[in-house]
Length: 189
Length: 275
Image 1 (cartoon, rainbow over the protein chains, first blue to last red):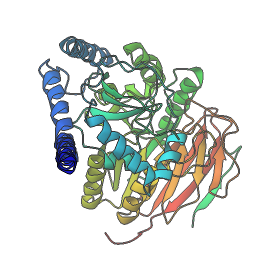
Image 2: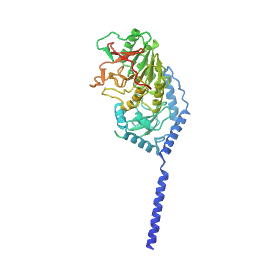
Image 3: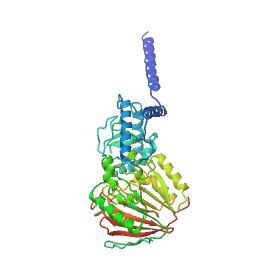
Image 4: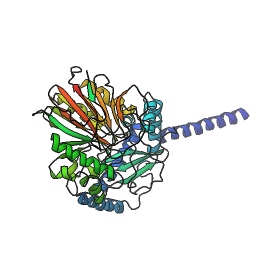
């Protein structure tokens, strides 16, 4: 009798464990699924942005016109994204994929060159950039190492990965707006 | 062999000033709006009148600080007003202090609305790159452009130097690893960069000549360390460069804001290898 109870209990434990393990396998998205999720989020942003109407597409001799029309476009985009919070693009499960990819790149054959380039390129100090804020005027852009760009998902025109301190910022240069921030996305040097 | 004939205190122009050559000026990190930039603009106009050139290549950091309309006036339009009035075209590349989406749409920078672009003048193909953001798409574009260019001379210009003995920034090693193979494969002859606020003429690397000219507005004094990479350098004054390209030789002169020629030479055309 005791042996039977123990056997049944053992089976139950095995079943519970199996259920939990099966559940955890089912809840872990694959990298390609996460990449697709990232792409979908980025495209949703692009659609929202383009729906606000960017009037400026051709060069003009008037610096006043360029700056005014970009600011007006950016203001419309900011309003349209009024409720956006950090993580709209880089939130789970995307953040884990990016952290892993960045760590792998830095650990790879180009890692030392990337570190050296970041040190030499006029590093930008850490700033607490907020999503939907403007990139601060007069602050230079840290160059983004090409070897890192080879390993990150391709972005549509106008968006770029911008390194600010240890943060990876998704910057829209057409509006100069911060689209999202991956805090401490870059490894400690 | 490189013929270096210009040294300090020499004020005589050494360019051949041939009838059909391509002649242009080079400035880098100019966009301060301060007195030295205006002095460079004045010298540049004197040279334009003396030797004749109708375009200027800009190596980035074209506008420092804000990018309001008044910044464009103070930091570009006013210092170079006589040249602009004379119809001289400025071809800009983007530096880390430049706002890419404002400057590429600013017509006087002749970027055709693009972060990176190419143009031809006579027998010279110019490739203006965005070294702040050398993404795979730009690399593919550059390879395609280099492959299909039939011009004898190829000059690439962009902000971050691949070889650089300056102490403040140094070379961009990661960018170097991506660009040098393309430059070698497709016979780029000369590479011009800014970013380090000095002038350097570097020892040729595998037949390619590298110049750093980041002192047309900014200046970092005593920045260039001792290096066997550097054949000539200037880190005590601002400067600009005049280049003249004929079929077989590229001539250059580097002139300070006071009008002194501090470097000059002749680079023979060299075919590196087949595509």
